[in-house]
Amino acid sequence: MTATALPADEARQELYAIMRGAAPFEEKAQRALDLGKRFLGVENGHLTRIDEETNHWEAMISTDPTDGQFPPGLELDLGMTYCRRTIEAETPIALSNVPEQGWEEDPAFKEHRLHCYHGTTLILDDEPYGTVCFVSQDPRELAFSESETMFAELLARMLERELEHEQ
Image 1 (cartoon, rainbow, N blue to C red):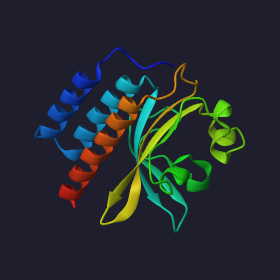
Image 2: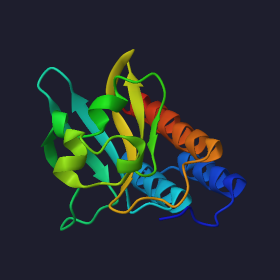
Image 3: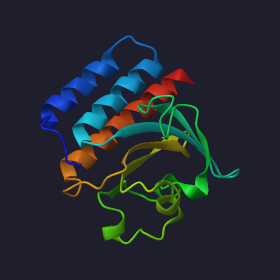
């Protein structure tokens, strides 16, 4: 997998337009994840809700169809996801080729065989809420660029703000 030809400035402007719109949160999040998926050149994007105390992971919003591997509403053991590491990290986790980056023994890779993962933590009320993550079965040809990571982080921060308004 490689990133698409969508220029970063164009992707950012499209993201701002999505978030300024009057659509409900779920629609904004879906459109933002679709945009992130296109910009990063990955198969799927997810907004997850995580409960570390119960080891619970749920795909609240997903670009994966209902019959896909990670559809909306899917619940998993947090320990079997890369997101468990994302919510503990201080910066986004960007894995363009999991085995080549030394994560081939990670339980998430063994369970789901996702070769590509980009995740950013969502924080609400000063606590980890979940993640915005983008995944692919196949590895990317190139590592995620700083521009791609910054875009994914902007998308996550904007969804965070929308979630705060929802609550």
